[in-house]
Length: 159
Image (tube, rainbow, N blue to C red; front, side, top):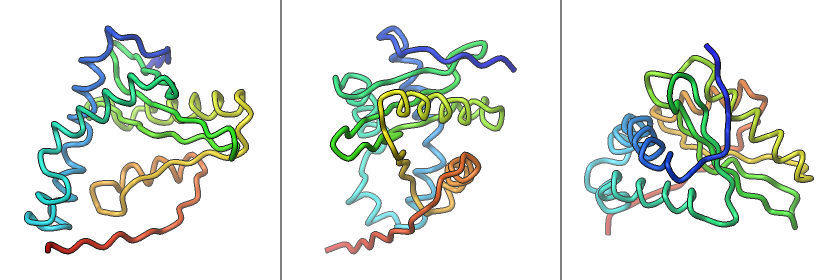
């Protein structure tokens, strides 16, 4: 499959938000299962609304760079934030449409983001993801790309 990566353009917005919601739906189902419905509702709420807002904010932020991966259509996207003071680049968002997963789209976006970070003088790259079962595919992709995980545990309790 041919994968090309290009800069995000405003006309890509609907496709990017749609694929992000499709890609992250099983992740949110997993998070709800792990946290329980009460805590999930208290901490996440309407995930589609907040995820749409967060993706759009990343796409619109002046300090963030965004790209789309294109096969026969927009198959995925990535956003990167740079911290020049710390010489660290963060692959802030990465999503691949579920029907395009396991075809190299995510790996191509990761490589592209890393090349951008290197060209901008970054010395380290950061990617964050969840430890729940729904995030297992993301962890596998990052580990395959050579990233080392640093376990962090967040505890939640309904008050």
